[in-house]
Image (cartoon, rainbow, N blue to C red):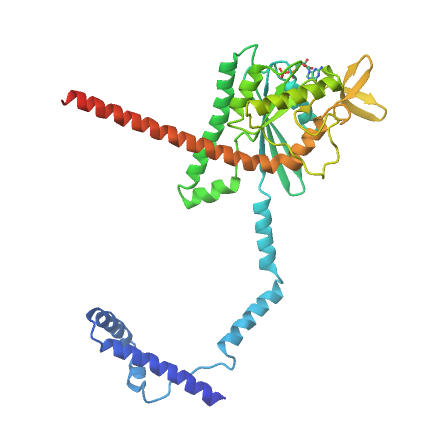
Length: 390
Ligand code: GDP
């Protein structure tokens, strides 16, 4: 056994040296030069000299351990695995968890005419669902961002509400749409800037891609009211839905009878089809048992209030009427709880995915516009050149 090993190693050594010599004596200048250098350096050591003179004749003193290299390696691996069983897999799982558990950003814009209960809607959701304290603010004269946070198990959901001034009172439809679309586009632009910035260097990429911030508007709740659908609302819906996912809301649901609501919903959906307005498709799976008492199609019928009432042992948010108190989170009275549940539990990731689509469309359109502008400019400068140099 011992002899066999020796022979094997001697053979490999000899063949290596033979290769070296053949290169030194070979025809190519460059190879010769570099290997001479190697030869010179090596010849400085007496050990090498000895080996060189006796290389082909005498067997080299071989320090050989009893275990083969492959056996030795497998022993190392086994001992590492023994001391930290599966530790690298655990670390990988941890890495994956961290990546999967990046915070989710959901930015919700609330728009519509003044006085429809948009701010109240945001306030009550922040209080009831997002644990925020009293929100004191004046009537919405400018766009306001209000932050809420949900952390549960390993999930962090950053919800940002974007409250907007309503049109009619302070704004004409045109200036109002300019304000809203300007905001949505600005969010796209800052997102785009950060996306571009992260590809400037590896360091920036690691830093920025880890944060995974997203300031784009993922959904717009469009509040409207009856007794009939207004042209201004349709114009606004058409414009906004080209930039953002829109979910329609029939505001102040307590102002209508059930029949009126069903008719209004029908009228709304007919008009949306007629004007080819592309709203977010709110199709929910069967995991959510609560179905709206007003039918399975949008708009959601919402009643909002920040007023609280004691009913038995429960403190509820509601509105008081001569005939009783309505509980705004009771699905028998309002779609508020259903909307919230479906938004977070079912639509959230789909809305973010579709925002990528809308964002991409926006970026392409901007590129197209820039190209057209450059073409027009060069056409104009060519014409000027032609006229002046004639
Ligand atoms: P915004 O201008 O759309 O933000 O409307 P606000 O949230 O400021 O609400 C305007 C008024 O409508 C306030 O007096 C609210 O208390 C009231 N309001 C809000 N939601 C409802 C609702 O669902 N039903 C009724 N009847 N009134 C509401």
